[in-house]
Amino acid sequence: MPEAALLGIAASLAAGAMTGLGGWLVAASGAPDPRRQNLLIGFAAGVMIAAAFFSLILPAFAQLRSGGAPVAWAAAGVVAAVWLGAGVMGRLGLWADALAARGLVPVLNAAGPDDPDARRIALFVIAITLHNLPEGAAVGLAFMSDEPSLGWATAIGIGIQNVPEGMAVAALLASLGWSRARCTAGALATGMVEPVGGALAVAVAQISAAILPWALGFAAGAMLFVVAVEIIPHTRRRIEHGSATPALLAGLVLMMVLDVTLA
Image (cartoon, rainbow, N blue to C red):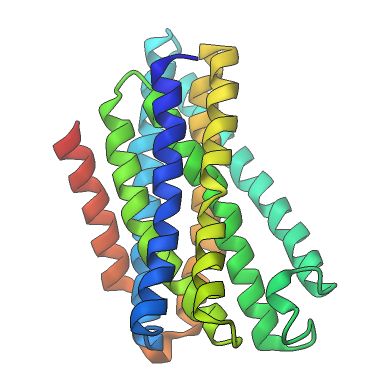
């Protein structure tokens, strides 16, 4: 296996493990209040949006162009890949909703599937877990691109935003009565999906270099779907605790700075 592929998988593992750090911070210092939770989730959304465009969509377009595709065809190809990624993520979301409705999610064991707060928390935790698949894929694929520096920018950005994500997950699990150790383990478990996504994406990209731009667009679409359908509506429902927009913009700017400085 090429060094870039191994590095991408290892980086996705390290980035995913940062959710465990977030969970540990909650266990050590206590759960953040609702306002800080909203800001943490908004920050994660901003990093995901920037990563989708700067580390996935733009490199995908550039690779299609370097392969000889006209501008219109390259743009159409990236758009199609983004839509496909969003569509697949949407179907996974419906599947997760069905599991939660039947009480087949560990988060619901203590409160029961009929508890509306517990089910809402379960769906959020599932959404965070599922979106870590394309995040891991984003890290792995960024290292496989023509600009390896994108891999470092993506891994660092995703790793940083995984800390507040882990804190948000641990805080929500704590509200269901989970112990500190279980909250930390639960937050870490959501991030351990990332190396799976990284390994799958790297394996697909190695089959043929022509697949790489499509895989990049697919991962971007999946990430943007989660932001638009799950994360931003979640912060809007909690608007009484303060707007998450400043934190979203901070996350977006941070990811842009990382992309520029590490390029």
